[in-house]
Length: 218
Image 1 (cartoon, rainbow, N blue to C red):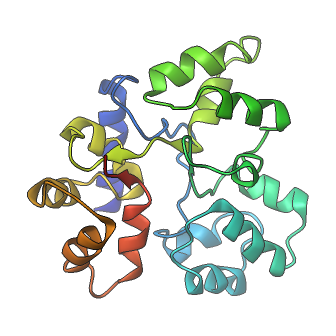
Image 2 (cartoon, rainbow, N blue to C red):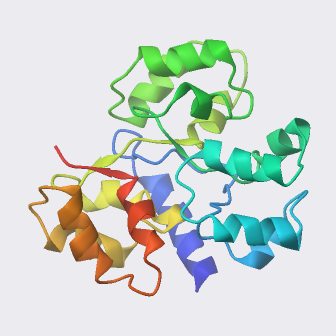
């Protein structure tokens, strides 16, 4: 079933325009540590059963900075962590992300940090391709590579099904969640979100915080 969802999400992302997408195209299918199965994480470089248990115990991991701290405490070196982040990552919000978060994106140094912040507010990945593309013209595929580490939070009250569905690869824009996000409109507060969405994840209460991270209410 999970393979079917990933395949369907990949197909969807090929037909949704960059003007609609609000999760960066997942070129390398980055592993999301909050939802990944043990077997998926254990297949990644440097992750041992002990490290995987530490990651699971820390869920929800709402920032790549938090994940970096966990892995540092588990004695992974900086080169090891940098290598791992090419396979597993906690996506960074283009509009609300911190300097520390952006600097953990593989290959994104101070210059790219400056550009990520300069063009705020980000409203679409068409804008991202246009603005960031200016700086990486000589590196084929670099815009798409950087894009996959990021997202633009979707408005719970106005986002279309197509926009929300772009988050399907990280189990946010699934048909079930799209239905629930629309059912409780108008959304007015985080407290309302926690109350209504919390009904559906009582067995996994940390999931509410993870879902909320990708949404905004305007």
